[in-house]
Length: 304
Image: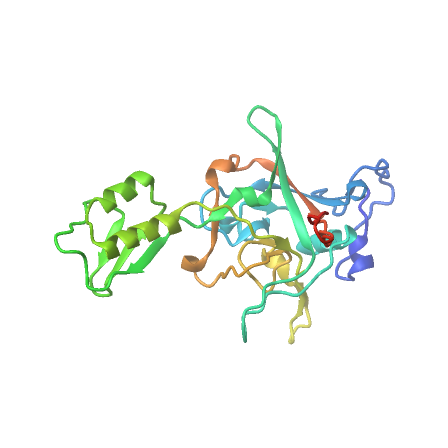
């Protein structure tokens, strides 16, 4: 297998070994960018292919994909390869690195080329499947929602035993955990005609509904850190921050919105369990640079 030494040529970050006696890949076929063959450049279709596997189906997320052996406990997919090689591959398909997220003095979202990421795999019947990465991610629902209820609970209201509804008398707050169903909403509304209480129930219902991830992925590109004492160079995304759904200054790929990783309670996203195949399923991430929309002329819709 011939491995293209793009990293040394493009970034100067790493030299990728090349087997001189290995056969050249067939024309038009994806070219391996690492010795494991888990990262391939499909120049004919201008896309980057990352081979990995499903490592998490249920839980809050900081990453969509991490480097293997790093953050599998908060990532849907693990990739067996180096983040710096992925950066080289992204540049090879025309992606332009931008700037990482900034939190101070005020929030500034990460920038860079917008990327389209699709996941391909085979289902239980062996049929090929393909979906946008965002379909495997949803807004966090397994969390507590808190609303003020000044003046306390309505007179005579008793919270049913076993309900996810909680009353914090000290702070005068109602708490609800997880997604609220239509039936649960009806049962709670039937407890009281008090307008303030009913408004809180409606708010809990609205906030707790499952919402798909709609944010775009962008390419800030991460960076190299040099230890001031040892002078050792370290590409920061190697810590696991490969494709993030929570903002990190070290992210190779990030979401173009405010998605803080400061405490689990603040995380925006979780895995959409019902849509993700079984743990260990082999998947391929297809990454392309999103097409820019052409400015619309007067009276005409925008086009790509």
